[in-house]
Length: 430
Figure 1 (spheres, rainbow, N blue to C red):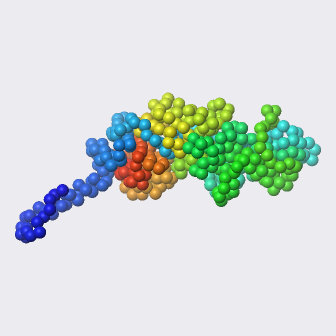
Figure 2 (cartoon, one colour):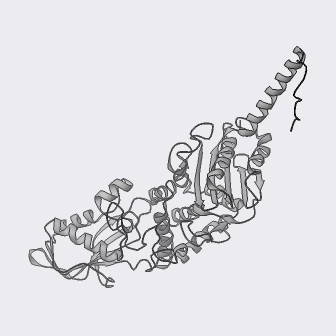
Figure 3 (cartoon, one colour):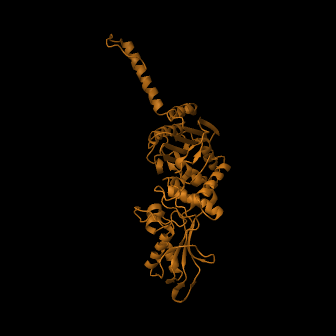
């Protein structure tokens, strides 16, 4: 505080007025610098600027920043204490999925049969629609509108038609045994979550009961089997029995198959919009690929072990999406994971899966101006009292900064303002 001026005072001299003007100008300059820490400045004052921003984040928040180009840390603020990750958990899920399946890896949905194709195109026996954990599987219209494409019942029906099947003397059976039967994760008591939808090894249109999303399916494998039955009948292929759910006989042969988009594309569909359904499907896919059966708990452990090998060991991962508050890691460990990913074959796909500040995804409406726009990529995370963002910034100097800002016990909307200032500071370093 600068004191209170008396009510009556003599008119100041010209020199005094000029001194006052200079003083007020200096105050404005200092205030502007505080409002936009270090934007365009050199790295020498970066730590102080970032610390000034973090000063209003509370005692339950932490941050870490590392210059990946020069190979040295530039900022640490309570950086070793584990924090609730929220959707930063998806960084662990997608990094592990890209490594395990490969960037070009795909998930197959098959139609198998234990019967025989006889005269006049009659298939005598049941058709088994076997899920492979593909989060994009569904109808042609839904997949095209939602993801720009994906595996569909329409494509399967067309392949069966071309295989010469004209009538099915049996029924279509939906097989979801690639996953366990739990419909959700720990945040919803393993039941269907309104933030995810029902999980299934044979998911169809994200588990939605209709394409406008006003309800959820109660029996996903039977629902998917019914949609394949409809697709077959639309092509003139009669199906004798009604659709149901069941398990495929071991001796069944593959009659037709469709594949998901690449894992690189699935990672982008997960991270950019922060899609909880995709993340929870992918974490079960990790366990399915490793153990033959997809479970949330096993998949989360696989993701955690992968991060640990890279130096990014989380304190705990409980799911794939971050909806559970049990998902915790320190900013330092998140940054270590991000730093290690730069040296891996999956790096380009992983980096491209992240939102771009001011451009797309969950960062598309943030930092629409300033040096961060188009030069910072990251994964956001939001729960009640939790806000996070971690990723990479390409600074004006040409250096790349790895950062992780995990804020707990804070209003998420106010937290985003602090985070944006910090990213602008990193991107503005000359």
